[in-house]
Image 1 (tube, rainbow, N blue to C red):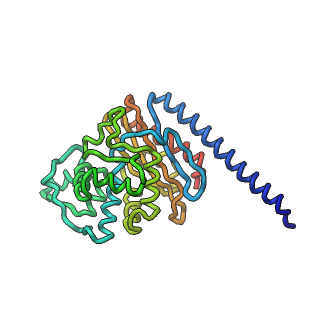
Image 2: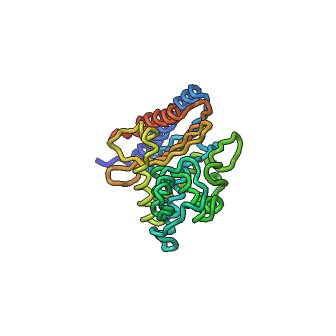
Image 3: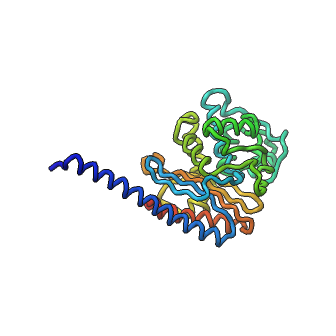
Length: 297
């Protein structure tokens, strides 16, 4: 038997109200738990997590600025891969690696130089910046797209605001000086750009597919957000770390059919934490996200 029209409308309204109350309750619970974690680490946690295709969003300090550190490298690779897909750059083009400064944490470039190989392909550099987070490779690719200002122009064209900006090269961009807006993003801005780049139309489809593959293979984030999520789900991420307490991790979770399930941008700014402790904060946030978004399968 069908319900009278007014009854159906009341039920739909009641359902919407119930969903709204549930979302508000989840946000309040999540805020309380992150606030307690912040007190424990004497720092800030910025987070924006959105369930793709639904209204569920959990946020904490989502509009505050945090230093990006190496988290920008996933987007950098995406922009370069987009140029490759459009034919303005060749994936196999050999780039010199011996005519730029070899800076700290450049394991891929350094190993090749030590073997007497002073070049890498564009595609190899993209893999190195996302999977291993090679700093010298990142500086080389930044020059390919017009430096930090070129990167910023591309991001802000997608975002429509200045909430995400890159101003310097590695390693200076990791300074993480309190109150300095340079080389920073808000978690909400980063999550928005990532969703449009990885799963929208901001870059070529094949470029986005390759970018997702590199993030799935990322070796630096195994103990961060994905460390608190079930090993049975597919997660891709890109981390960033400073020497003075900034620990970042941006991630996506896929459904079993490969479609996007969750986009997360998380930054921990806690000067008193060492590397293992900072990574473990992300793991604990990953546990909370697993609970709140039901990431059990």
